[in-house]
Length: 168
Image 1 (tube, rainbow, N blue to C red):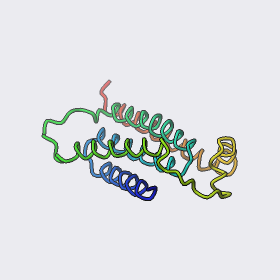
Image 2: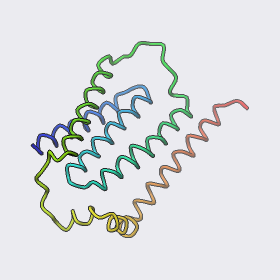
Image 3: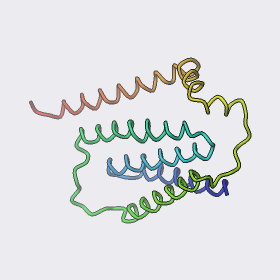
């Protein structure tokens, strides 16, 4: 049962990522990225890592998506196009994948995946929030800081590019 849930969730994550890349509308791409983040959160839940599941939803699906949508709205990419949708199957596919992800989340959350993975040293490091925080700010401090710096540069770049286009 767990393997089937994993395969379905992994397929949803892959389809969401590919749809994000091929979508021409920036808002649709951001929404497909949100679907991908949610699928990865469910994968964490399948690994019996509820803390990482919650962090994935709150930090990535919450905060980072708000940042992305803010940048998209700042650039004015949300304007409705006059041409009809070039990919008519995109909306039904998104609804179907979102519904499948919701069903899998409920099944896993209610205990459908009863066999816990074997305990290991690596899994124990990422299951406790205190240990995870200590790892993040000691062993993985440089990648954490680089990620924050890249996001800051991206937002500053968008604001600068947006200000160049405006006539004052």
